[in-house]
Length: 107
Image (cartoon, rainbow, N blue to C red; front, side):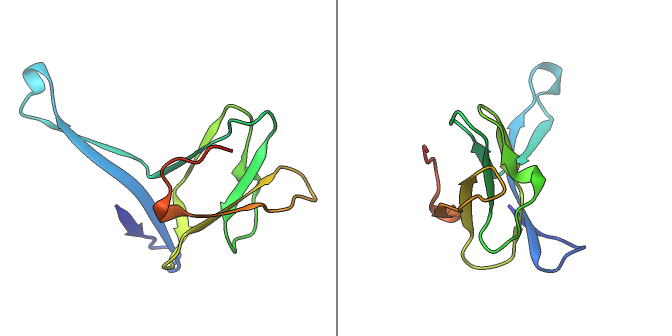
């Protein structure tokens, strides 16, 4: 599900929605789960930075080894692009990935 931001006109939130029926005495209840649509996990031995292509990098977009981070807010445009770099001041942004075709990429 994609929801437009009310504060920033050029941003949108990407959220996955699922629902199940409750168990036991709650069997008539529907349980709705909201989760980030995109999760980025670092399987490398050193920290990596990630960002949407064309957006300035921020501290919160650094992932330590073995950790994962959601990517929920993206700019409103047709093609969603993600770039990745090794963390540091002189980082060279390496990978350009089209988000809509992404299922799982191993670095």
